[in-house]
Length: 315
Image (cartoon, rainbow, N blue to C red; front, side):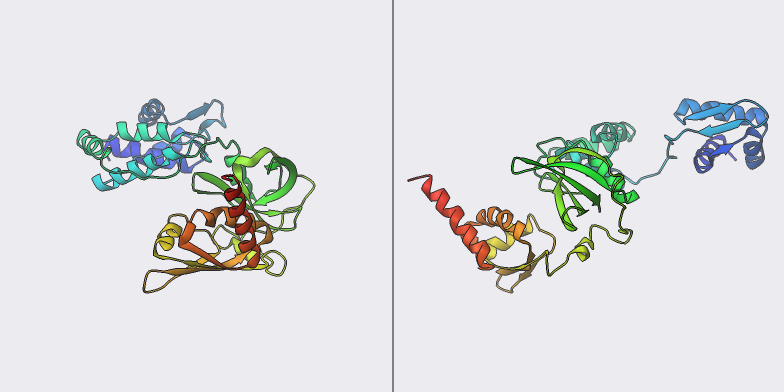
C-alpha cells in the first residue's frame, strides 16, 4: 500500500474510532510502530486534531472537531458546489458556527487552476437572486438543536411592538423571502404556531414543561399538528390572473394550494387561521388587480379597510 493511500485510509479510520493505539494502527496497516508514529505526525501537520495520552492505558484520540477525508469531485460537481455556497451570501445568519465566506474561500482555493478560471468567468454570468436578509438572527443554532433533541425552550418574543413570553418546542427552521421562520408547538396556545426568528429576543431551556413526542413531525408534515376545528377556521379562496399565478409562484406558502387552469389563470385554496387574516391582507394587496378574494369575507373586509386607509393618505 502506498503512503498516500495509507494516510487517506488512516484519516477515515481515526475519524471512526474514538480512541486508538499505535499498536492497533500498526497491526491494521501491517507496518512498524515507527512508521505509524511518522504517519500520525504528518496527519497532525495536515490538520487532524490528535490528542495523545501517556501511560499503560494511554493512546491517541481525535478531538471533537474532526476532519473529513479527501473527496474527489468532477469539474461540474465542483462548480455546482461553489455556486450553491455562493447563493448563501443573501443570508447574514446561518444555523452553523462558520460563515459561508470562509467555506467558499477554502473550497475555491483548493480547486485546480483551470476550474478556478471557469468559475471566475461564470461569476458575472450566473447568479441566484434572492431577498437579502436584513437583520441578524443570533438563535438559529439553538432553535435547530432544540428541534433535533426535542427540547422545550422559553423565548421572549416581540410582535407588533409588544414583548411576550412563550414556551415552544421547535420542529425545525426554514428561510423564505430573506427571513427565517421556526414552526413550533406552543405550550401557551397549546397548538401549532410559526415564529419569526428575528423577533426572538431571548432563549433559554424550559425545565418546567415536558417535551411532547414530535419525533415523527418534520417541516414537511408539520401541519398534522393543526387542530382544524380551533386553529384553521377560514377557507381561503382567491382567484388569480395569469400574472397573479406567476407572482404567487415566486413566493409559495405552505398549506396553500395553487390550482392552475389551462388558460394560465388559477385559484388559491387553503385553510387559514384568524391570526393570519392581516398577514394575507398585506400579502395579497401587493397583487393589485391580479388577485380577487372570494372568501373568507373577513379577509375581504380587512382588504377594504386597508385600501381605504391608503386612499385617505392622499386626501
